Length: 95
Image 1: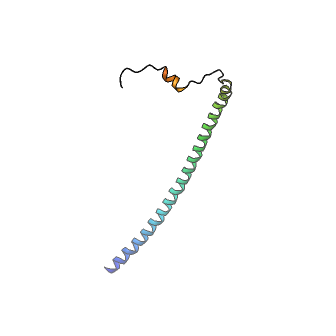
Image 2: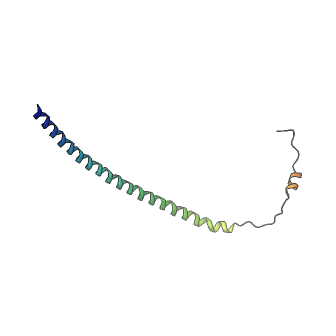
């Protein structure tokens, strides 16, 4: 009976060691795949941001000369605050 327990214990230690090695290899593989996935995602994000920035620049470069040409020139008069209030008719009753 004691001999059977020793054999069982050795078998469990061997299986436990093998499981640890397999788990380590699996975890290392997942970590490497996650690193490459993150790298590809960051590169894709940088490319997308660059495309959006170039598109924004392309659209705004055409609009800048038009904005400069459309300056508003004319005469204006400063109206005092009291003059504005004098032109407002009184309200009908409280709100």
